[in-house]
Image 1 (cartoon, rainbow, N blue to C red):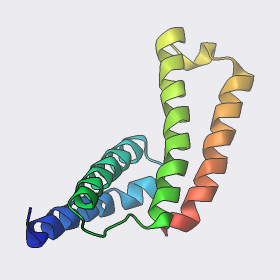
Image 2: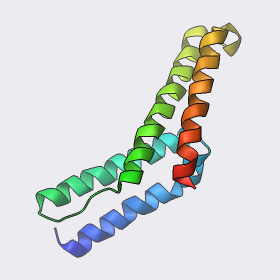
Image 3: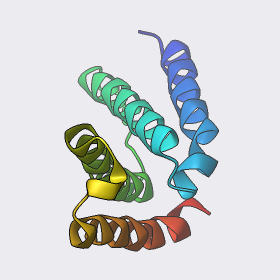
Length: 116
């Protein structure tokens, strides 16, 4: 793979990350998911570049965003599973629901400075 082609693909991956940046900052469920998928694609292409002896790496700040957004996504998915199990939010265990929401808020607070 030529360096020019590789740089074009990497630019596309960064553009895909940028598209979901605002939604990620707002902790939008779909944007968090899409951003994490795009991050994984970027990581894969950079690993491929490393095998081709090209010196490229993901900035540490993006790694932090990926990690924190994963914590948010896990809690969002847990809420969705609870809705499937209980059929209605009115049957959710209130203390667990509050805990999930508090954890999402805490992680969102960590995420906001990184996504501004």
